[in-house]
Image (cartoon, rainbow, N blue to C red):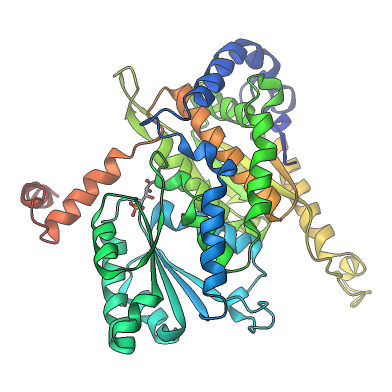
Length: 462
Ligand code: PA5
């Protein structure tokens, strides 16, 4: 199981000014936390509560559908291209980057055990998109369009460009190269899919984009690239037992949510840094940034009080960021809580050869890269303690589907508990909608003329 160590946030370690008296806070908050957890779990099947993602580890249906489809199309495609943005892309990107062999897309088909390469197009940069289209053989590419709402401008524009190119290359057969993951009933893409006859998968009701990684949004690309999704869902189910526990002393999501909440609201540590010591976990940082930011960054509490809440998530990677952001983390404003993610056992043991023995780098010979990255993580933690900077550490025994499932689910539950502590609506994103409407107006979508007018007025002001 993954573990959490919060001692680096304790006042006993970093002093009263910057640390929390964790024992006292656990006592103060144990009832509130118990109430939050029991509310979350008792409401998870309530329509409109936005909590269906809490059932995904148990859902056999989606796994069955995606596996069936994967077996039907086995060996037909060399590439998977995912079109999507935000929650429709980041979970897939994070998990495939963590679980597929490094440099997957550069490996031969044999080295990939016959599975296809995978690309995520989660932006609308014309240069990047054109560049990708220049290197992909679309005839051998399965395009998975993912959008819960079914009308996100960025994803729809990508889809339109690619559908047009596919049609030119494949005539009527192009439809076999497009699959869609979207809402079961609503949205423009659902209508188009029905007209076009695409194979479709569902983003279930009450699962918001940033909580959708364990729906077909993630499970389909994972299965298509040979990732064992049963291992992932088993990991979720196994950790769920402890995350349902209303006792804060036994629930790591609750502990981390409380530490983050109090660090922000009591001690002004309103930046949370996600820093895995693993390149494979790099995009877990991106996924977490969206989860934490969109869920907690709100200007109104559930009781109607107007108050801007949320701590700003920042991504970093060890050891790389020791040479980029660590100077700021150590000596800049003491307003950050740093989340280390440590890996117990890397898949590879890489020896550093005994060469240059009589020079200043001779000490490295005979050690391993594994020794080095661990020593660097320990040293960085020690330096943060010296500077009285708060830290928490999440420990992953290994990077595999079982533990990645646990990590992501643990962070989702942590976010839901933090949202309840802040007393905000964790599951909406009104400001994203506002900007979307301005874009619709600017791009001439019928019905959004007022948005365009308001925007033009604002542009004249700046
Ligand atoms: O978390 C969310 O709901 C959002 O970030 C969405 O994932 C993002 O806006 C993309 O939306 P959609 O999946 O509807 O295209």
